[in-house]
Image (cartoon, rainbow, N blue to C red):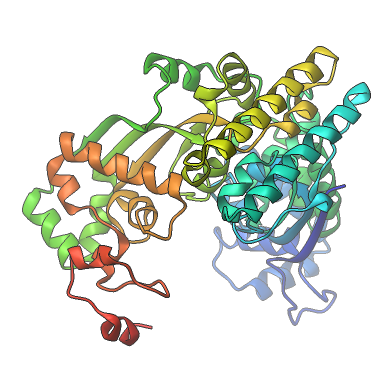
Amino acid sequence: MVEVRLYTHGPKASIPVDGLEELGPDVFIALEGLGTFRGVSLEERARELVKSGKDLLKHSLKIHKESTRRGHASITTSAMLQMEVRDCSRVLSMLLVAPPFGSYLQESQRRSEVSEEYVVTPPNLGLNSRGYGEAVSKMLGFYRRLVKEGVELEDARYILPIGVKTSLFASVSLETYVYFLQLPESGEAKEYTPTEVFEFAERLRELLEHVAPALLEARLSFRNRLATYPFPNPFKKNDPLVSKVAKRFNYPHETVVLDSLIIEEPGEEEMLKAVYEGEKETLDSLNPFINVITLEPMSLVAYHQAIRHRTVPTAVESIYDAVQRALKNPEENTVIPPRVKNREELADEFQHIFTEALELYRKMIDNGTPPSSACYIIPQALKVYVIRNYNGYNILYPQGFIGTRTCSYTQWEERGIAYKIWRDLEKIRPKLASLMGEKCRYLGFCPERSWCPIILKYHKYDDEIHRLHK
């Protein structure tokens, strides 16, 4: 069962006003909203309302409902929550870390070894329960074998199902998770939305009814689901847009740059100067002049990492479409890590277990298990297609996607994607590509514990210089 532990929330404050001990988010944000009409202090506004005899919570609810209906998202984006989500599967975490307006810290399978205690058994398996348990045990057994034979955790995890436990910390606004709060009443097909999502929504709603009831009621009374910011969701019935693009490009095995728009107004000289001299203000202005759209095939392992780059707008195909494609041609839709693929016996066993898991998925569906439960057996090596949109920050900045994901310490799939984008841009946007590079190019030093030869492409560097920058 998913556990949601709320550690802190806000804004809240104690103020020196008779009749008030503490202002919670409901009243605090309402008073600050009134401050947009009359710039007096929070204390003065609170004192005036207390003196008028108004019920502060009812008055706050009225303010929040009016503001929310008129599109003032700053009301619910001002209410902040810091929480842990425990004992959830990677099915749920794949959704919880996807909204761009939030910050997330998650238990990593690159560092944490998975055991039987991590297995999540979804509901509604019926007669398929035994088969599910046996399949997961087989996947875990092969995972342990890979680790024993020297395959690193970050590669061994590819054979694991997405139905394994993780935990995460999220620092978000109330608005960030409104999509999940709306789901129970939205009429969305539960056949495709995992039960854990509804469990999480219920736990979160219970917490919010305690700490911010007026904000919650006001926001949920505004029922139009288009009034939430988009984020990638693979657990939908289908996605004709992404699927159509992937099919048009014959389901490529490598990243494809679909389009790139570089507005030439800044000029090559200005761009070079801004990048090489680190002129942040100029480079910040350059950010919207650059737009690169890609089609990227990747495993669910890489996808879960890719969405953590929240400044890269992303759309993903339906995981259910991806499984159907993989059932027709498993080998073409399996991402096997190179350190496994290079060993024939391990690669053959990997592919066999992957295919067996997909066949069990099909059998469960045929036996009446809903896709929302059957999906838990899907291996993390399943290939999915995503559309991504990179701006100047993610193309040219040291902490952007290209800068960080071309580092030699980066997960191999993400690194391959970053270099493929760079190589493609060398052909179609050579001026822009000449400014791109690994993060050490821009920083002038390597921020990792141990440095690698990449930095020598750009700077004179050795152990002594590296020590000076630690």
